[in-house]
Image (cartoon, rainbow, N blue to C red):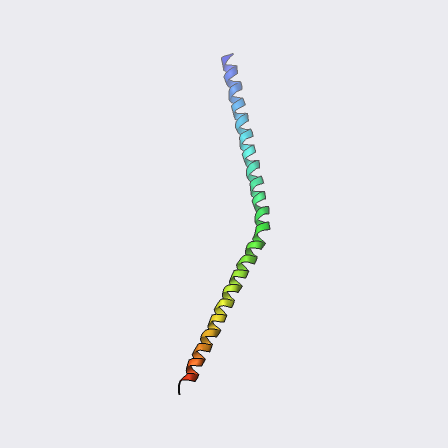
Amino acid sequence: SDHLCDEARKENDEFLKTIDENIQKIIKEQVKEQVKVQVSKILPKIEETVNEQLEAEFLTRSSNSSKTSYVVAADLSGMEL
């Protein structure tokens, strides 16, 4: 009788372990899927923000280089060549 109990307990433990592993697999898959969905929603906003920052940086630099060119030209015109 004890042997039967041990055997049943062992089978029960294995069954519970299998259920636990399956639940973990399911949760993992659902999390992966949700991450994909969220990233695909967020990514365009990130790209837009990065592009805006790059544009702003480019405009700042080109405006600074225009000023620099102007200053150099003004200095040169002030000098007697």
